[in-house]
Length: 311
Image 1 (cartoon, helix red, strand yellow):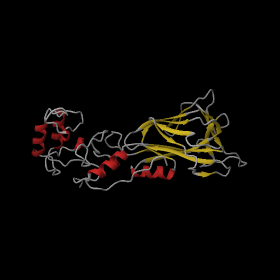
Image 2: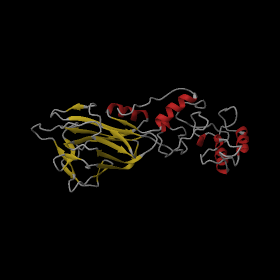
Image 3: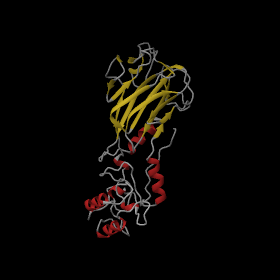
Image 4: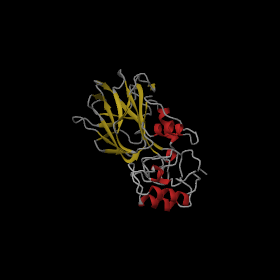
């Protein structure tokens, strides 16, 4: 595994635990084992779809073809992709028989022979099996999402097929940023035979549409892609107008008084209070007052993270 997953942390309001849990979850994570990839998707309650081509039958896939919410973009000097079937003599195998994906030049992969996957529905996770009968070394292949790479590790085999081909897995999960494109790329790999199967796409519930999965969203009903939480209480500023001292888990006149004292404050003024900047735009103004009004006499949140105001 290129990066280890970080389990959910139940640490109350301890600031140090908050920083460890939230910062780790804010980054995409790469996987070379499918079980770990699936566990990460479980952690964000993601819905999955496995594309194994078995209902498609043998067919060409010209560049731009769509199969089960994946658009395949590939045209290498006239070579295209095709769905193929293992032959009856058992000379070939795949992770889910009988169909798999390969190129029309007998499944040869070479430098610059990249495959782009486009997703009409933005994803939180994408992974696939890669099979090859040729020797590979670390980073011969990589899966890339928005500049973040999951790199093949030659010793991390998922298995060996009946035809002797090695099976590798590459996957990426990003719980806080949805993505619409991924690329399977080469890195000086030379030329070798390959095929692909059991592509997995995953989307986690995201009620407020900010790209952050509900399961880790510190403000799950108000859009806040930055997850700004200036007071470190596991409740995002966007739904945390409880800024009075002490925090009593109720938005009331005490909080209004604190907001008034910070009004028109910016990071360069003496009255700057980052907790009163609910929308994170660097100034406390009428927009923040509007948020407080909406939340008046309410409880801050809701947040999926452990916090003192959770019911």
